[in-house]
Image (tube, rainbow over all chains, first blue to last red; front, side, top):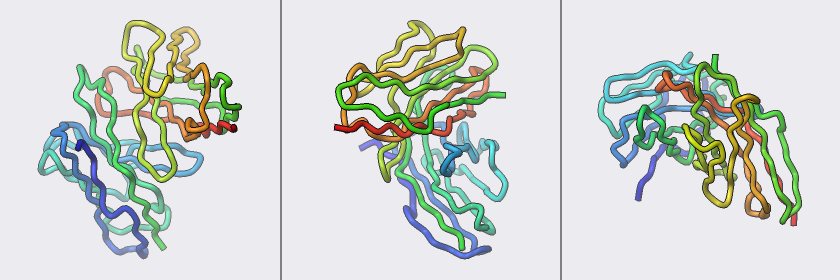
Amino acid sequence: EAQVTQNPRYLITVTGKKLTVTCSQNMNHEYMSWYRQDPGLGLRQIYYSMNVEVTDKGDVPEGYKVSRKEKRNFPLILESPSPNQTSLYFCASRIPGLAGTGELFFGEGSRLTVL
Amino acid sequence: AQSVAQPEDQVKVAEGNPLTVKCTYSVSGNPYLFWYVQYPNRGLQFLLKYITGDNLVKGSYGFEAEFNKSQTSFHLKKPSALVSDSALYFCAVRAPRALGRLYFGRGTQLTVWP
């Protein structure tokens, strides 16, 4: 079954404690991206990766890091989480299409609370 | 700069009635436009997209959307709403040359009552 898998799905942590949200896709997609969803703000792009070892910033990259060492995995790293990073996070990969016109395939989300 | 506006936070319709969820956009060049739906406690699911060609595009679950270049709009429509259509709907836009960037609207909560 085609899927994007995120872990953990739920996490409560404290300010400053480093954490990683993993994302893995089994569709061999080149493109992957991270979004955060906040009430009234919709989805905002954090980082994206066009392919292995190629990453770039989205709209709200501050406080986050990513890496893309292999095609299937795209972890999101919060080196020193703060309460304003409390949010619902989504990882997505993109269906191949001419000039990147494919749609996104989303994971189920990771709800993060930073106290 | 690219942006998407969904002017209505909420849309409520009776089952069986037509529904419209509005979306306007701002982008450099010809836009790539998408609609996604989010059910409670789930990730987003793709509904339909406009890339080029016919202005009326059809998608999943009986939804369709009309691209209107002069009004920079891409409204989502369905002729006859179902209670099960109740969900959060997101419009998204991408500029042709910005391969990695996709901009989402704030979302519109659709409620269909029996």
